[in-house]
Image (cartoon, rainbow, N blue to C red; front, side, top):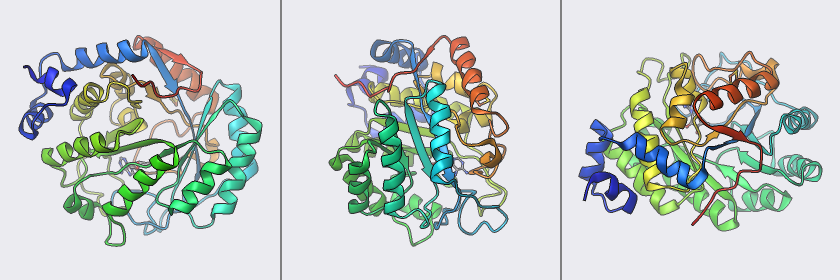
Length: 340
Ligand code: 5AD
Ligand code: FES
């Protein structure tokens, strides 16, 4: 059986997967595009990203908003500001709002629940996605009751030794996995994922990532290249490559035909046509920024992040054109995952 079939049937060995990761294989991208067309047609879903706080108590070595970065000006949006972003987003056709932030203790469970309920009351027909890091099961349950229905939490790497090279000892892969399985059990649609080309990453690590995802079976899988940030311990490391990221998107499409795969901002940052190439490689989601322009530069996960100067409406129409030019079509429905 050829390797493409083995990926689709999930019968590949580690060695076979490593060979595809390292060298690619003939027809991979074309097959991935064919499968996404079978499952999702030409539809590309949009999610409006609201980056509501850049305070973070964690110190991940790769991330620009880490606690230890004393050079960054910090901000928090108020509930009213967040609601204004939603209002603008709704007008522009967004039916999913992603509230993303650092792990900021200022936003306690009550405040988060209050914000979620307010959005839920106004936008019954929208999905509310949270991306606010590791919390207790009780917190996740409270957010869910308040009206949140999706959660994004990348596992970052599924290898313990690699995990501890990217994070300080206060963080553990074990707790991250606990969070992901809790979220799933509670009933959230869950998104996970990892960075491509993060420092010390090996092909075997990427195999572990894919095997872990097969265990978790998330609805969404977000991947993007690692990009250096000047004010982090990883300032001197090379960015992940475009080629490898695209190849992994295609592999993911084969192994997870129903998954929602975003073509990420990080991909658009390492190459001007990165997001278009991501779509052609098998991705079917884009996540334009709905944050107020005044704070966009401050949500600096990595250097040279794109779209920091554009109004939400500009971002939205820019993406509309990009998606169209790549041969796909933005749809404005809620964009739930499709299962067999
Ligand atoms: N380069 C690329 N991606 C990054 N992220 C954080 N820092 C970086 C970086 N330097 C990603 C992480 C996180 C997501 C919100 O952004 O994977 O989960
Ligand atoms: Fe934001 Fe293009 S997507 S300006």
